[in-house]
Image (tube, rainbow over all chains, first blue to last red; front, side, top):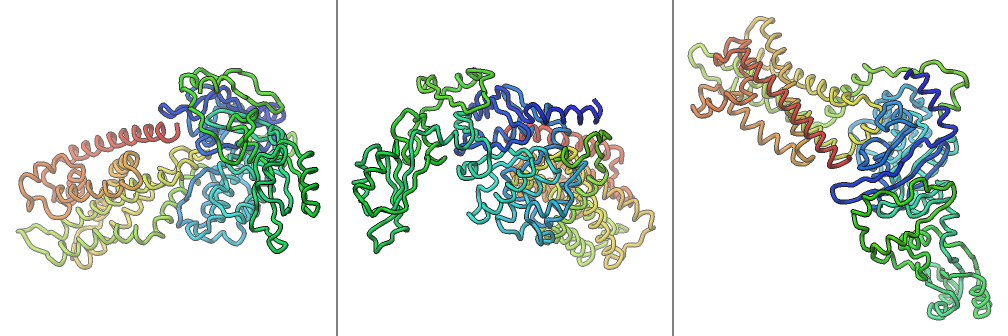
Amino acid sequence: MTGNEILRESRAGRQAGPIAELLSVSKNYGSVAALSGVDFAVRAGEVVAVLGPNGAGKTTAVHLLLGLARPTAGTVRLFGLEPRHSDARTRVGAMLQISKVPETLKVKEHLELTRSYYPRPMPLPELVAAAGLGGLEERPFGKLSGGQRQRVLFALALCGDPDLLFLDEPTASLDVEARRGLWASIAQRTARGGSVLLTTHHLEEADALAGRIVLLDRGRIIAEGTPSEIKARVPGRKVRCRTRLAEAELLALPGVRSVHRNESERSDGGERSEVEIFASAAERLVGELLARDPELTGLEVHGADLEEAFLALTSRGAANASPGPAGRPPVAEVPAAGAAGGPPAPGAPAPHMRSKTSSQEEVAA
Amino acid sequence: MNATTTPVGNLSLPPKRNLPRIYALEAKYDMLRALRLPAFVIPLFAFPLFFYVLFGVAMKYEVGSFDISRYLLATYGAFGVMNVALFGFGVGVAAERGLGWMLFKRATPMPPLAHMAGKMVSALLFGAAIVVALFALGLTAGGVRMPLSTFASLAGVLVLGSLPFSAFGLAIGYWAGPNSAAPICNLISLPMAFGSGMWMPLFLLPPVVRQIAHYLPAYHYSQLALGVLHASNGEPAWRSAGFLLGFTLLSLLAAWVGYRRDEGKTYG
């Protein structure tokens, strides 16, 4: 196949089909199943977040798509090619979870080297601006702060001006300020139309950056949809207000599941403080609140945020009445034999939100 | 992104990257990286130079017509080059593996061998620099006098010796963990250098050691270098060269197996 044909074919592919896909992919490390029958795709122009706790299989999925690992079963495609194909690698950029690159080399030296790998690298000034590295070009990597280091790794991922950018836990070790800074750079990049696959266990991050979220738990996709669709999965509302009502009293109100009091927000001479109340429905609760504390202020009603969505879905607790912040209840591991048996329903992925309530897993457990 | 920046209908072949430039940059930046680490560079230079001054100049003794300053020029040159290959190259590979740096590089379209080749060239050039420094010392403090062509041939043999030990270093790099590679290299290189007559002439060593020497790659390397000075042990050059070739191939095989094993364990 000539370069022209590849180019034409891949451009056509960019309009229609997925640019990266896992088809019924399982991956075992020894006896540990990191991924079990996962079907997953990134389409052109999409920003997808793979969200899950540590050990969910997020990094494994990224490594498979980058051709850094081979699947135990199933097929991996990157721009319609085998991921190790250099034409596929030329079109992706990756920010992996690596702590360090050679520390004595300067930022611009790292960029020059990585840019040389690509036939059409991003121009250096543009790259420096895109990653927010202005003024740091002459600085050795070892003399950078944590946030600056992550920006260099981000820039290295952008060197080839990739069609698809992989970001594996890009802000995992950063403080809030550095995290927001990197988010801005990522958002700037996605605004220009590139596709991104992001992994994170930061729910706020997925919500802030992604148009679609894939929830991964113990090697299986348990839910998939837009951030609001994921949030809608959780029957419940979050009511926030400043009140003098005591916690015990709030807990006794209709439909209330849990109450969080924010002590640092105490005001009015300590009489009132901000509380967050998780409840099955807001309407009756708000009525009761106002009846008991007419001077209540700052009333806000939210859909539960991704944190609650995540806890509810990963505990298979959508039908369960206590998706409280106490954490996931222990669930026995799915036997490896079942995992190796392949996905239950090939071809299942629907364009919209879907969720596997997986009653068979509960039976197995 | 390219779709938006390239005019529609432009179906000319995609631009080619400059392959030789990639290899050259890999070598350049591996050298720069190392040169900026004094703790790495200084011992590699200081060890052979210091030993040469100690045994080849200060404690110089004469055994008939045997010229120790000349002899040690060859063997400490070999020692220096070997250490760069083992510590600069082999330990370097292990250390970079620990950082996940190679994982990133493998995800790029970098030609698969470019980084390795760059590091190997870098080790070769470092070795050459040590040889040049040692020769300068030999010419001045050591009072070594020989034809320029002899110096040139000796330098050539010494620098080429970087290759088998780079291969061996690579094998250690892939089999040892990032933290154990350096001690393992020390454990191998120091006794081997001593037992191969690199530190002091073989005939001063006990007979047992002289017997074992015949099975050591460092011995054969030293003999090839000494052969240029007509000071070898009588070991035929073809046998030493053959031994080193076999040693190189075995090392590369071990490195390959180690690489596959590593890939399987960590990533695939």
